[in-house]
Image (cartoon, rainbow, N blue to C red; front, side, top):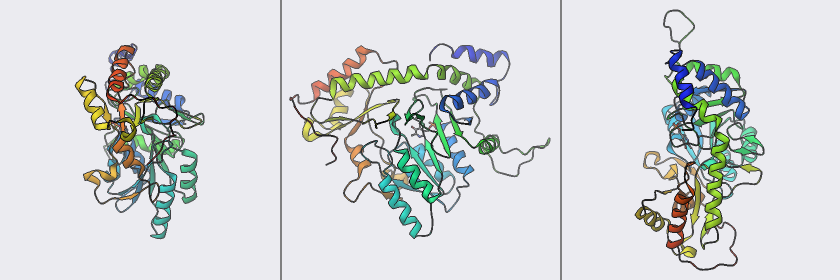
Length: 381
Ligand SMILES: *Cc1c(COP(=O)(O)O)cnc(C)c1O
């Protein structure tokens, strides 16, 4: 928390707006829309709910296909199943770790040949880094299939000067406890299509028809954000730029201290993008470093430092067994490579320099220290 949260919570209590609507909700929506440069925003109970609503608004239903990044948290794809549709997973590419436009193109060509295009494409911006939105948008526009941008991890990031989350028909953000700003739990759906977001609010409040008696012609959801939590969100949004600066500072320190070690390759930041560096992620090439990711995670855990592997690709998840998957190229399976070799370091905005130096020391101690004069670029073997 940053300080002003209590003020907005008190306003909710004093005005007795203890409900999933009220002035904080309205203001939070307006402020987020302004911050990211979208016409409209709808505050909801989670990022997952926002994705679910987006799919619902695009009329995704049983028998439909939805393309989705494979290297992501399971919440990106679960709502596809809620709608009874079928996920098709798309590999990453090395420059951003996000959706490969090559794999996406092949998936489109095949589905066109099968006579069934997807209803939507869910593009994830992993750990704060935007996907290559120009390339992805060009392909989706060509096939006339809408994009849902899963920007749950990338609030505060930009791609070519424009806010991450504003490139698709819909964008979603998450305010879960672990995200760059939080409402303890919550999410936001954004779009330039004001009419669609009006409908999103309607669906999110049990799809109640405009009648004095309780009448329903559609199946809705109970997905609106509490006015108390929206108050927390308003205060958090005031410090988003500080949070991004803090996370980027943490990344820079890791980078300065560790990038010369053999076999350590940090997640790149694509030219003309700004990543919020939600989590500092890197690859460990065991052949060069002398230690595997698993060993490194273990060494860190002995020091009571919590680090994690990168997301397990969804096409490898037991729950999605049998789903289609399109890899980057015939010989390159980038998401599986990243899963095998990648890890995320502790990156909390409130991490102190001392804490970070402890992580750095542990990694340095663990790695076979040998001087390398020249290192190749990020290299997929
Ligand atoms: C956190 C997250 C979500 C889900 O957000 P919730 O608010 O936790 O429902 C979706 N996608 C990605 C990539 C996430 O990291």
